[in-house]
Structure formats: C-alpha cells, structure tokens
Length: 216
Length: 318
Image (cartoon, each protein chain N blue to C red):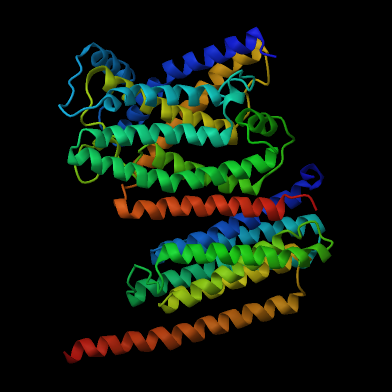
C-alpha cells in the first residue's frame, strides 16, 4: 500500500498535512503578530509543495506559481500586514466571536465533513496526490470559519488569504496546476480585495479614532 | 514460547528502567538549571534524595487509612509494569502480551486513581485540591493518548505496543504525515501527564498552582521515596514510549543479544537528547493557568484526531 506511493507524493502529502496543521494553529492563535507569522509559514509550505509538484511533473509554469507564492504570500503580504498592525496600533489580542476551544471543535467537524466530501471526488482523479484534495478543502473551510468568527478586519483578511492558500493547494496538488491565467487572475483579485478591504476598514476607522481623541 | 534470552532481556529492561529513571530526572533538572543560568544540581541528586528518604521514618497523619499506606506501592508497581511493557531495548518481551497499548493507558490510569484517592484520604484541603486537579488533567489527557495510539495501531494493524514498534522499526522509509500529528499530540500529553511546565511545575510548592506536589504533601519517608521514584519511572516510561513509537531505530528485533547490547548506548543517547529537549520546552514556556490546561489538552486531542483523519485520508489502501 504505502510502499507503492513514490517519495515525491509522500512529500506532497506531508506538506499538505503541515498546511492543515498550520490552518488549525492559525485558528487557535490568540496573538495577531504570531497569526501573521503562521500565515507566512503556510505560504512557504505551499511554495515548497508546489515546487515538489513542479519538479515531479516537469511543468514549467508551476515554477512561476511557486515563485509567485513565495514572493507574495510568504514575504510581501506578511510584511504589509506586519506594517499595518504596527502602524494602526491594532490590539495584539485576536478577538473571536466564539471562544477558541469551541472554534477548534467546530473546525474538527469541518475537517471530517471536508474529508468525507472529498473522498468520492478524489477517487475519480488519476493523479498520485489525489488525497490532498480533502486536505485542501478542509483548509478552505477552516479559513471560512476563521473569517466568520473573527471581528478584526486584519484577521478576516488573513483568513481570506489562507482560504486562497487552500484553493491553490487543491489546484496544484490534486490536478497539477491551473492555467497561469487563472492563477494570475486570482492573484489580482486577492490583491484587489486585500487593499480594498484594508483601506475600507482601517484607514477610515483609524482616522475617526484619532479625531475623537482630539475632540475630547 | 518464552525463551531464556527473552526473560533475561525483560529482567534487564526492568532493572535498567529502575536505574536510569532517577538519572533521567536528574539530567532534566540539570539541563533546566543550565538553561536558566542557575548553578546546576548534581546529576545524581535524585539518587541522594531516594537514599535519604528511604532511611527516614514514615510519619503518618492521624486519619490515614490503609489505602494511604498502600498507594505508594501500587503506584510504584504500576510504573514498573508500564516500564516492563514498553519496549525500550528489544521488542521480544515476555511480559508484553500481559497488556496491550490500551491496557497500558489503563495502568497509568490505575496509578493516577490511587494517588488521587490517597491524596484525598487524609482530608487536608491541599490533598483534595491536588487530587481533583490531577483527575481533571487525567480525564482530558487520556482520550488524546488513546487517539494517538489508535493512529499508530492502524498503521501497524495491532494494539500491542511491541508489535507496533516492531512494524514501525522494520519498514521501508515512508513519510507518514499522521505520525507527525500523533507525535506532537503525544508530546503535549506527556508534558501534561508528567506534571511538566505548561501544565504543572514539578519544582514548585506554590499553593495555588501545584498539582502533583499538592497530592504528595502528606507523604514522608519511604512512601515519599517510592512516589518520587514512581514519578521518575513515569517520565522514563513516557520518554521510552515516545522514542519507541516515533524514533524506533536501533531497538533490538528479537533475542539477539548483541543487538540488545548495542541498543543500550543508543537508548541512553536518545534519552539524553529527549531530556535536553524537555528542559528546553520547560524553559521557553510559561506555566499556564489551570483553566487553560483543558485548552492545552483539547489541542492535543484535536491533533490526535487530525492524525487519525489524515491517516484515513492519505494513507489508507485505495
């Protein structure tokens, strides 16, 4: 059974599992900066897994995706988020609507659902890494959960980006990559939503707070 | 079925556990002191402690029943049995069929129940407090430990510890992502079960925070010595279990005497590294509030279940 799986597929499975673990760690994390670091780590793991797929299948456009992932998700976005947290003096504690242990249990339930849903779908796939489809789906659902249960815009954005990580994992590992146009499109949407949301929620909020302080 | 060499190996494993366990505790204490830039206590400190305590007279509280006097022996016996079942040197253990992994968890549970009952027996407030806290920790840690064992048992198709270790030790090199999850969960459980820092501080006598120390406040003399020795044995047992399950290389397969001899220095080396890592964990972490302990162990349980799920999804036969 297991001996039949080649080493590269084992590596991809391992990275997928690590990404899932990091998704849970993000769900459990109480500190904002640690959350962003975890997100960066998730991006880095995603980049590694994409690289392994690229090397195994020899599809050149996957190298670009891996590079893009590393640049955007492991470096630029975490850096911007770090700067935002510092600049806006966001409270370092993450505020959750549901308490964290309950969130974790709900998350566990979501993982079970995702695995069950993905199992029949992945049977249809012919690739060796079809098992990761369930993990990718679980990561997406956990990210959804994080966006729903968190109050701060920054944590919601991190949840959104983490969801995109899950989608990307599904695309690269389960089906060996999407067309580069789709990837670029997603990257553009991500950046658009990201900046849009940040400007909407933070800059205005920030300024109003400052004015109110002066008035009093 | 039971060979002479198997019996010898078994006896040797138990003796080694009895000798090495206090040494391991001393080593962890020494590493902790170095990391916290204190001057380190001698490595053999636990032996001196045991020697001192065994010579002292036992002072019993007025209301102490026979349970109070019997508990140290029961706890000590449980821990020796646990050390006998867990394959530390070889997997050819005549005692191994006596208890599989689930019964092993039960053996730990038995020891916990007895020490908690004994703590409540005298009727002091600290004893009851410690006993209750210990049961709280135990009831949260046990399911997580069971889930870890289920994950490994599925990989090895058996719940016998010796068989699991044998299967894991003699396979082709395959990365099991589920083992990573199980390993982290097991580390969490071991920290909680052995009264280590994120959950309990073994060196504290601060009333509000202590768990293990609160239970054994009333003990003295040889009773206390047995309990301290049993605590070292528990740490040794958990360390050996973790090493055997997740780093099984070098454990002798059967009645091969040379392999058994070669396994000893390797075991000592692995324990030394493990002890240093434990001291590191204890140094970089702060003790959490008692009400955060359920969260800590809930995380362990969740990781163990995740390991099980990942095992089902990624590594099952298609």
